[in-house]
Length: 312
Image (cartoon, rainbow, N blue to C red):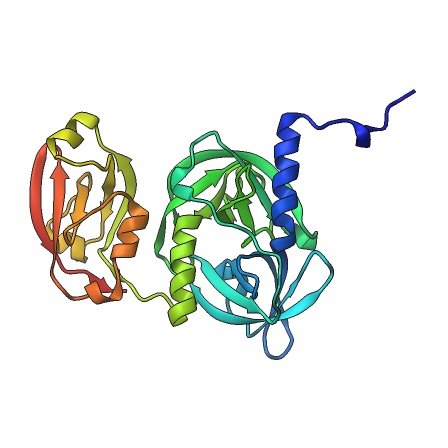
């Protein structure tokens, strides 16, 4: 007699994925965006993170739209309003007109490790709450947003994504959201990207407060890098991470300050820089057009420079 597979225990991998999906899937919504004239602009995904209806999605999911609605896994379709969006990080916040909604918990993208299990949940091609799984393929990637701004500290994963997955959550084995799925590499297989949740939390907080993200910019591309422990001791630095400059815009603030590709940014305005996400948080609107002291490591030489960030 063939046993009923429903009664068989799952293998450990399947059990982890299944439990994570059970925790998060009720908070995943299918977003419809349309113009005032009713013309549909397409669909995407989102994830609720508060019981009173705030949800994260991608900016490109709602771009150009005036009307929004979201379908829940329980069959309800609710109207949504735009709280704010930030094309510079391809993130947006909507709010559903309801309370007591299921909502997901946030983890930390800073604690991710390459090879770690991740699960993508979304609505590809309108198929509600589809699930794919994979691993973290790389950390600290850069991705150019539709606005032209480089999004730093992006998570690369091989969890397959399809049109409609955009804006849905990338979660870890505990069911905590650690990223917002945003893109796949065209013409490639198994190369997909998600905005780290640490960046998403910061952006969502500012969107909820101001409706937009006000920031300044240095005119450089960079990535989080790990300092040699010996060098960290020489620098008397407890943080082992900093930001390595990978490119400098001609005539930008960084170039005028004398920064060069290959430099390692250690301090900004007297604060230790421990990664790209933190540097983004330090580049507030108040910094624009004001002199800020920075400390830089160029090969083995320590430099103190003055940079004047530009309004973004």
